[in-house]
Image (tube, rainbow, N blue to C red; front, top):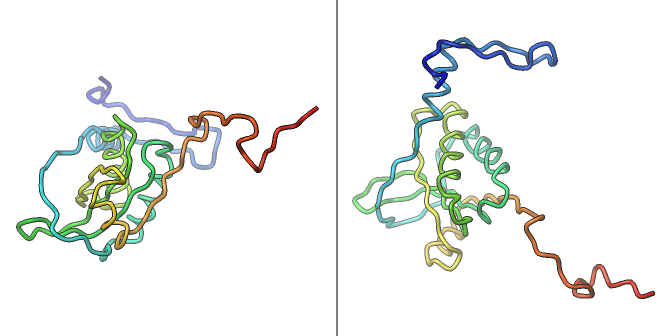
Length: 170
């Protein structure tokens, strides 16, 4: 819609020391970068290893981005993976994702890659139930990211069921 209008964006103008003007070229780059979706592949993993060789900026960017994914999954494991055929890479496996959240989680990982300075970087993403056999293998070698839970989504417990908050009798 606006990507062809040759427009820039002013951010925080007159309200913060971080005020800045983004020229139209930066806006076009941002639109092109964020509009690219993940591609799908059906490779089979042969081995999971502890993650090595990742820049600290990427790990920090992932941690920051996943902290905004409240309720989308319980947790994620970052591992090095050897795929069938010998290809090696890194894999971020989300455990017990919310149904329908897969696309948003994959996009969040892509954004973390891009905004950590690794625009050309690549990371595989998968989604598993906690009962899947691979989840146990990932937990042994992976770097764990706990995603925030949505406390408001929890149904209220019945009175007297929480020993930390006994019912008040009058």
